[in-house]
Image 1 (tube, chains in turn purple, blue):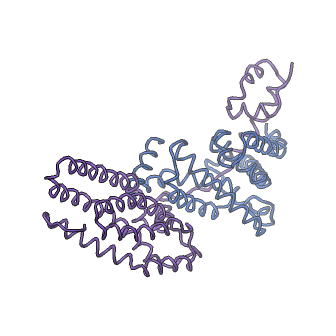
Image 2 (spheres, helix red, strand yellow; image 1 turned 180 degrees about the vertical axis):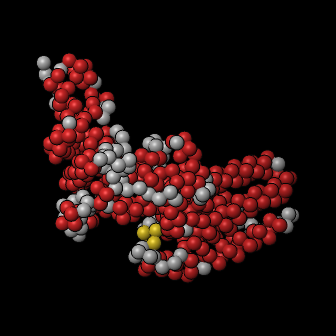
Image 3 (cartoon, helix red, strand yellow; image 1 turned 90 degrees about the horizontal axis):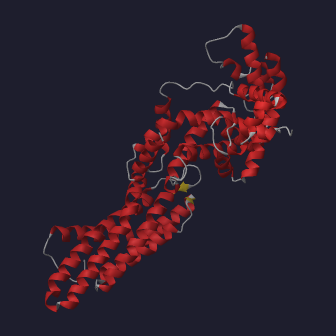
Length: 245
Length: 195
């Protein structure tokens, strides 16, 4: 009879699937059973290794320590919330815009009314998009000096990547609707989002400063803010029309 | 537990920051236990706990529910513990239970014996076993120690361990075998003495 080797016994001890047949062998082989019991005693004794007790409020202590260091929770959390929504919203806008374009093609007389509806659909969506973009830009503009030599901007990067997809769709829609002002702003925003998305996740102080300067030089944050305010005003004035959003 | 973990993860991803606290509450003690078994040092284990939850939070968008949240979290904890122990070794620092004059004199683990307290002989014997387990674990290579801790204490499968360590299934298995062999060699005389 072939005896079991140590590896088979170890696998059996840990209940691995590969240990099939071991139990049957142990039932009939005294020698292997003794070897297994010796192994069992050793491995059971390993469990005696104590781990220092933690205080009753340990979980609360850990949370306090962790929460302090979480990377700028506000944006991070909002980013998680946006991700599935942002592109879907952009797609929805395009569907509505395409539908309206189709209607215009069939009924030339309704062109003015439909253009106003289309404009409002875009207005709401672009306003929301600009607000999200603004949060990412503000967060980067206000980030403190890196504490350990580098600043983790991975959340902002993921947000920027997702915003890029929507931005592209809105820009194309605005351009095809002849809204050059909106298309131009979105084009500029796209360049900054692209730069954020392609930056290193861990930024040195110098790199962060360069990115901030780029944002500042383009005046993109101010433009987005001003445009966002205009959009809000337009949204508040139901029948307002015009050449651009 | 896994269902409620998945729910909490989904809530964090949906923007509910407080849901992350639930995950910290549920897993901080077990991450500490894992870290302590990996590093043998209380302060290092505390660092591992905090760093694990920070890293997990930052990488949560990469977590897919293919493995359980706890397995994923332990993987982060095990890898960070490995880094920490490597750094300590490079700087010539010594973990608890490792041979050093201070540890030989008064290994902290012996003083952490669980109650109810057995008689003095039994206590002394338990202390010896624990000291031997601790020092043998410290003598294992980091790969052996991680694979063994994940298998023995955390009950992770060979497949999960190989994924955590970036090894083939066979390599993970052989790390465990080597660890068991070394433990057996060190502990068997002591354990047989008791039986």
